[in-house]
Image (cartoon, rainbow, N blue to C red):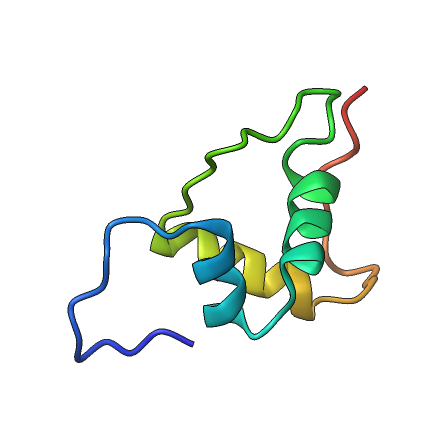
Length: 76
């Protein structure tokens, strides 16, 4: 993932974020739609992601359903 020894940009495009996470842009958008934009709001066309967003996205990408982890309910 990200290396601590190099200065990182303040934000990343969807394509840059997907590349850093080692996933497709489609997978990234699915994670965003399932976990962030799940209240009927539209994902912005010019979405920029911060390094802290990538940490959460990486967790969501790697996580599986686990009864010990409480996930946010779908809004809607």
